[in-house]
Image (tube, rainbow, N blue to C red; front, top):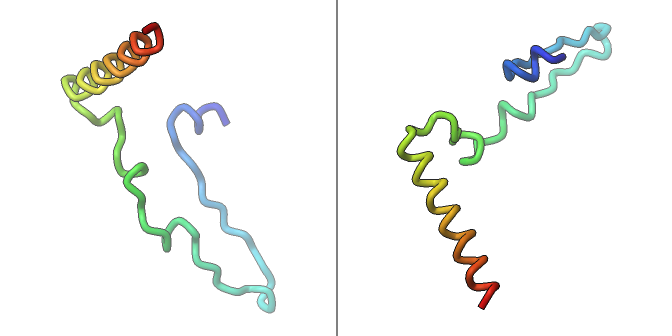
Length: 70
């Protein structure tokens, strides 16, 4: 379990059914379109892009703090 969480691995398990119970069921993840959140990884961004995100977030937070103090 721990190695799966750290490596991001997952396993597909095939369930065995008798001949009368076997009905094909489509996988939910294969039919659903990929959303933008699943396609963008912050770890794959370049270092300058990450620093820009941190700078913008920091500026927004400091702006909110200064606005709240006024």
